[in-house]
Image (cartoon, rainbow, N blue to C red):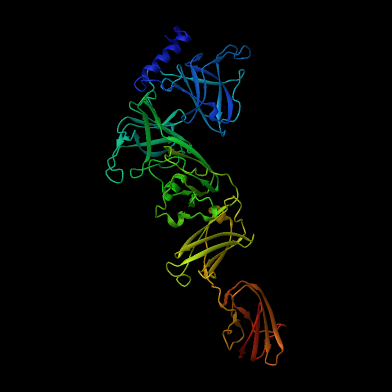
Length: 589
């Protein structure tokens, strides 16, 4: 029968069918529109569309990025030459601010979403001319005149994952209908039975539990809901959901999708979405949209990682998150809060808020899509992700003892890169455990492989109480985190030479001393007759206490010529900067 109908009549009948099927969804029109002045760049696309084998020579073609119209054309061209001579083509100008975005194309007889059909999806990014009058992009669309009911055949696939979703429309739980998961235009999961968990924070609320099928993994999903399981009567629930490779959501922690219905036009639309690109290492981000459930430092780490364990290749994926007071105009006066997954994952951590800046460290490149509604009220704009390849943010953690500081005592933490000579951070703190962010807000490198970093604890009197050092290796650059061992090493009030130990001794001894300021240190050892036996230049030493065997001056009981000295009384003189002091010691053999 189709063969007896002209091409014009096929398109007319198709338009009428689409309009009737969608009549229940839209009392008025939801006409497509685009404002070129909102965008800074554009590309062109020339397309030839056929429906059920017949050229489309009327209507509207629209290009989308997500749910946003980026290009629109209702006038067709008919090239007068070439292999497609006289065939109708849509020539769209498609607008962008960034490039590299993927497109979806739809055709409609009247330029409305309700009366449209999908022409093509996942069309590679906006960054060049696509197609021409002699070589157009061709889209062949097949429409089933009887029904467009969803279906999926599990036997076509080798693997699967599960997804548990809670869907609301205008704030009310969806407790009926069908949920379908798509990869492109292909149905990969389908569910018309809801579950109602009998326990937990979502006790009694309806959830769709989908099994989603795949052959390769890593594919991005689109979700749609329909009251009758058909494409025509469906609405978009969520798009660009990260790849099929794991369990997503559960009865106690479902993936939540809030869908908004415009009461004026009866048009259903999903939450807004915004994508942030993260690079391996430190990234500065802000939360672009207000989520349905507020994030904490823990849940944001899990979301960025894509799994509740926050792992990638059996290692921690999002190693830490730092919150800083972005409203303070002076970067050096901003207060920091830190969340280190390996230390803090039993706690939720701080709340993630709009208008605040956060620095996150991730193990690999990724694009993260956030869902939600626009923030309301006055907010300072949070910084967007910034592409950097060097290590401009690094965290140092450590523990102090009661010997070093009293409970509740304020002290100053100071970090210095001894290799580059650059002071990295100063921060007031109290408590026995500390986290010290080393951040350069100009995105200049703070540490590199092989650098020696020193962390000092400074008391209220301005003198050092303790310190620790570490050398940066590749593993620490990957996690941008190091737990440093802090050693009690206060700066004494006086420079003094102490009694050697053991004394008497045979054949070796240690000579302890204390420095109240940085000094060069030299030692002379004399016998009882005043003859020089041994001379040692220790070198430049920082202020501190040098009493342990690891730090005191060691004498093996031998002369400058390497011969063992005889029993008797000896004198050791030490020069410490401008100080010179002498003590007596005894060798007994």
